[in-house]
Amino acid sequence: MYGFNSSFDVVEENTGYLPVEDHINAIQILATDKMVMTEAGFVEIFVNNEAQTPVYYDNMMVVMSSGSVSEVNAYYPFGKRIPLLSTPASLDNLSNKYLYNEKEIQTELDLNWHDFGARMLNGERWFVPDPLAEMVYSWSPYVYCANNPIKFIDIEGKIWKPSPAVEDSYAYSLVMGTTEGQNIQKQFTTGNMKNHIFETYSYPRIRGTGGMSVGFSKNGKFEPIENVTGNDIKNLQLWFKVNISDFSLDDVDGAEIFGHEAFIHQEQLINASQKILSNSNLTNKMKAEALQYIQNLMDFRKNGILSTFQGQFDHAKFIKGEKSTYNQYISQLLKGLSNKERAELMRGIESYFNSLFIEGNEYVIRYTGKEAQDLLRELQKLFQ
Image (cartoon, rainbow, N blue to C red; front, side, top):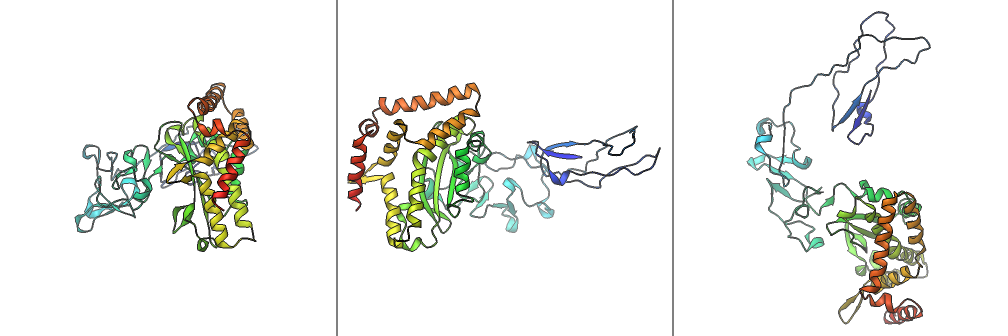
């Protein structure tokens, strides 16, 4: 017998076999006392003869018996139970305390709150702010799952995480189907950056948008790289983020966004930071200042005005065909796509390519040759 989940993956706990005894013309009952199904799925039951002599199976029946239903819970998206669709167990004799989002209900003092770790959920209301609210300042500090609990889940009552995760999306499967996608993953798992973090995650933005950021881990939280000091270098764990709009996770658009952010923008930052940290001639203070300089290239600030110079310089090199890893990535990506997806991908790249000129991206228009190198040298002087 094989047990499968809803994705047709084998569930080991629900898979096994029972041997038929060597009794001719005798009815044999092959049964298991109890089999717990922890998720929806399928069961395949069959008989198989591995002996050298013919065996005939007559009057074969498969019988399943079910126990009584002790509890049914249905919820509105934000966590309030739907009374007409629910058969809750008595709170006085509650054997299963892990209910909405599999969080434990606290019945002391008749509170009936769900414990999310960082904060409690009272029915469908949070009465304390999100402890990571500063990371998503555009939302209310009391917000839950970006006001979209159908698409997102909240593991610890903190910042939301995508559901399904990026790693389970079609776009990410396309990424991991390329050599370049696998290489960047290996670099952060078994390679020379294995002590650092490379994270791809979705965020609630319109289709076709993405972004990236560089920081380091401090007290388990993401800290922008411009805040790094010499004291942080000894146990430094760099943190590279790639953002993909959640609306792009189900198509080839999301795979292109990953390649754009990872190979047009972040690749040189990863390589530069690696060289800085491995340079034994630099003191920890000097290494910290050099890493801050990476951020200054990303977000060049002059007289309080933010100018994403490095990103635009990257775009200029992209137009000139100098981003070789990205070009190789797209070539590999195209091989695994249908004709329709290939056309969609190339239309998207061509449209973006043209928009850099038509919409007046001054860095790309002005700095696609020697002028770009001259400007970079001028910028470097400012930070000497």
